[in-house]
Image (tube, rainbow, N blue to C red; front, side):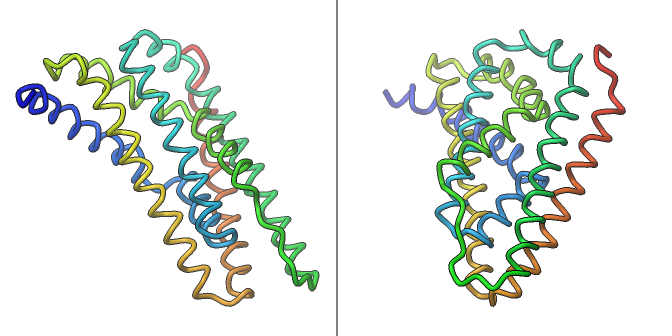
Length: 217
């Protein structure tokens, strides 16, 4: 039992590093989580964090089980996936911007908050459509299968990826929610508008990146 536990540690540590490696670069998903925490509070943003981590776990499990089976397909159509992902991020950014501007023009006391279930589903979709996430885990999955002698090594790796990814996304949600509590309603709206512009801009950048990668090449 002790030897089995010791043989799992390399997979666990590799999984933690992989989870943080895919989660820590602050892109469109991170900006969306920060904004969600700022405008909707910790629990709704936490649902988004869970959506991101869930997709990371699923992709990591698929990549670990299949190795590089889907690598060529994802690589060949990476541009298509990037354009679709960027378009979705752009639509969300513009929608959030329009919604925030409407609220700032109307004097409404009660503000309708986003649903945790809808937020979870939205972040699952956003993360799932990002080909870079899948490519990242494909690059690591096959290597992890041979990095540990324990049959449970790949399982430990996948679970460690999920926990570390969730912890980081939850931290972003908490930072956004904490800042939202400290700020006035006006300041929150102003930052929400700025964040929406940043998110829409990131979406455009992803689209441009995707268009620069022709499908099938």
